[in-house]
Amino acid sequence: MSNPDELEDGLLYDYEETVEDAPASDEGSTAGFDAEGESASERKRPLESDTAEAVPEAGLSKRQKKLQKKGSLLSKKREQIQYEIAKRKSLASATPEEVSEYFATVIRGKNPDLSALELEGLYLKKNEFLSSAGFTHDRDLDHFQEFMTQFSRAPRALILCMSNMRVADVTRALGGSKTCLKLFAKNKLEDDVARVEEVLLSANTKNNSNKKNKKLKKKNDLLKFLVTTPTRLSKILESTEALFQGKDKLDIILDASFLDAKDQSVLTFENNYIMCQTLRTVLDKKSSVKILSY
Image (cartoon, rainbow, N blue to C red; front, side):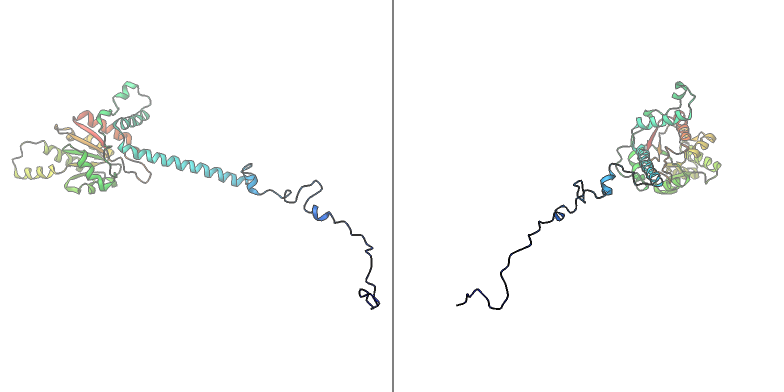
């Protein structure tokens, strides 16, 4: 009987492996490494962010470096400008000591050759100012009337603005021509002088028996505010002594919170020394005068 495991198909199925299994190649296990054992990822060029901190300007051209430096300077300049603007605005609500010292700086700057004794006669003393720090509203045209009601106690107030346009704006804010005498360069100087004398001297005239004079006096008595610029006021004071007549109190209001297109105020603009001189003149020639800043 034939062996069931043997097939009779004439083919030989039983054979031996004559070729030894080749050892596994090491190429696969060393792929990605060089002769020194570094991986390909380790040999990659470092990212820009990896070197940015070490050499921040390494990739910048000369022009880019120049622009970067210029941008930094402009940023610092903007910060300085904002600081100066905030400082100018803060003067409006500064203490009498601070305002007095500020004016002293202006006066010293304009008179570098004067002695300390000579400068003393030009200074505006701290006791000649009143504090308005208690006013909590915005210092704008809308609140000007409220400020005057709260802080101005004198029969009349002299309001100093930095420009003719501002004089007109403040006049409108305080009731117009019924309550304000507008004194600025758009008028003829002689007309302003005549009007000041009419208003102030009629107030000090006791004998007004004439019916016309009584009516005029009543009208003039309603003019509580004299609104002008430092330059205009200095010219008026050179032409008349009317402002110094009488014993009535006088308040001087510095329109200090308003900044023009150049971010200057009546305290810091180019004619601020003229204002210092004018204020000193009024204080020396008239009693019971106080200065406030709005």
